[in-house]
Length: 371
Image 1 (spheres, rainbow, N blue to C red):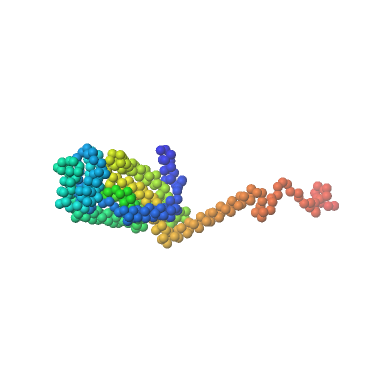
Image 2: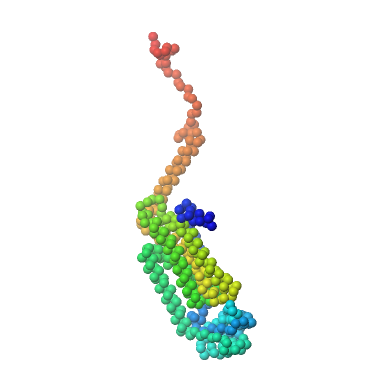
C-alpha cells in the first residue's frame, strides 16, 4: 500500500507519467471495436425486456419447490404458449415470468401451472402488468435518460466549457452503449432496476470525468503565457495526477457490486439482483475507462483545433527543437574534447613546445648587445 501511495504522489507531482493523450488513437480504436461489438449484440440478440416494459404476468410459487428450473420453464411454455423466464429465489420458491399475456388468459395459465406443479392455485401468487402500463414505464425511462443527458451537458458547459461538455456526453453514450450491449450478449433481463443502475453508473462516470476536468481547468488558466507545455501535455498531466484517485474510487465501488453480482446472484441464486448489479458492475468499469481514455483525450483534440492552441503548440515544438539542437551541439563538442581534438579536427599538442631561436639573440652577452 505504501508503494501505491508513493506512486500516486509521484504521479501527482509529475515526476513520472504515462502518455495517455499521446496514445489516444489506440484508445479510440479499442473503444470503437468494443462499441461495434455491443451494437452488433443489440442488433442480433436484442434486449431481454422484463414484463414491466412489455406487460405480462409474474407467478411466484410457495417455498421449497422440488421442481427444477428447466421443468418449470416447460410447464409455463405449455400453459401459455410463450417463452417464460424462471428464476430460483433464495427461499427456494420460483419466480415464473411470462410476457405478452392479458388478464383473461392469466387466470387459465395460473390454473394450469398449479396443476402441473402440484400446488394449490391459491398459493400461487400472480402479479399482472398491462401492455399499456409497460409502455408507459419504457417511455418514462427514456425521458428520464434524455433529461439527465441534457442537464449534464448544460451544467458542464456552464461550469467548464462546451468542449468538455461534448467530451463528457460522448463518454456517457460510450458507457451506455457498452452496458446495454453486454446485457444483450449475456441475456440478462432488463428491468426498472436496470434503468436505476444505468443512471447510477452515469453519475459515477461523470464524477471521475469532472475530477480530471477540474484539474485540467485549473492548470490551463494561463497556458498561452508559457512555452513549456502544450494543451495535450497539461491534459496528460491532469490524467496522471488524478489516476490513482480514480482507480481507488472505482475499485472501492466495484467490490460491493461484485458481491451482489457474483455472490448474491451467482452462488446464492438471488437472480433478482442480476438486473441492477450487472449494469452497475459493467457501467462502473466502463465509466472509469472512458474518463481516462476517452473524455480527456477528446477534450485535448477539440481544444487544440483553436488558433491560440495551434500557435502555442508551434512555439513549444520550436523551442523544444532548438533545445534539442543545442544539446546535440554540446554533446558533439564534449565528444570532441574527449577525443583530444580541437574544433578543426587537428590533434591537440601535448607536452612542452620547442621555441624557435631568435635571430637577434645575444651571443653570450648578458645584455644581449653587440659591440
